[in-house]
Amino acid sequence: MANLRSPRFQLLLVLQVLMLIQSKVLCYQYKVGDLDAWGIPTSTNPEVYTKWSKTHEFKMGDSLLFLYPPSQDSVVQVTAQAYTSCNLKDPILYMNNGNSLFNFTSLGDFYFTSGEPGHCQKNQKLHISFGNGSAYSPSYGPSALPDSAPSYPTVFGTIPAPPSSAPSQSFPVLMVAVIGFVVCSLLSGNL
Image (tube, rainbow, N blue to C red; front, side):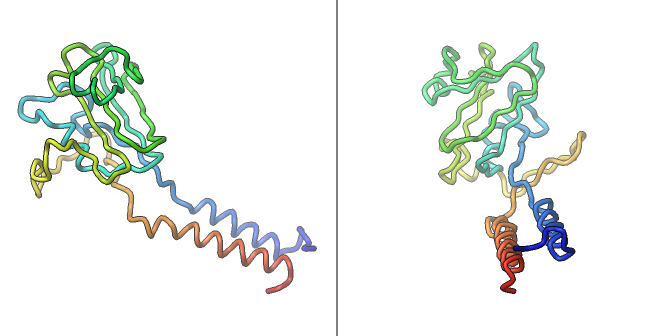
C-alpha cells in the first residue's frame, strides 16, 4: 500500500487538484436580446428576439437571463399553442422579479412571452428550439439576418462568446482520465 505522507504521493495529489481547478465551465448565461434586453420590440427591429435566437447555439446547462423593470413587465413560459395565440392564461412558468433566469435542463422547444397584456401581440416573445439543431422560428429563413450584422459596443462589459467546438470540450476529461491512470499505476508500484 502507498505511503500517504510520501513526497511522491503528495505531488500527485497536488497535480490532480490543479487539473480539477483547470477544467472549464461549459455553461453560459445569455442575456435575452443582448443590448435590447426584454421589452416590446421597436418598429425598426420588430423581430429582435427571432434574430437574437438565431445567433445563439444553446447547450444543456445554459441559461437565459431576462432583464426588465419588474413594475412594467414579466416573463411567462407557455405552450406552443399559447405562444401562437398569445394566450397568457395557465402559463408553465411565471417570472416577475426583473432579473429572471431560466435554465435549460431538458431538450425541446421553449416558448416565452411577456406576461403583460398586449405585449405578446407586439412581438415580445421568444421561441427557442433546443436540441434539434435549430434555434429560430421556422417562419424566418437564414436570410432574415444579414451576413454582416452590425456590432455595437457594450456599456456593461462584453457579451459572452458562444462555446467552442465539442472536441476541445472533451480534452480535459481525457487528460484527467490519463492522470488518474498514472496515479493508480504509481500507487500500486507498477510504473
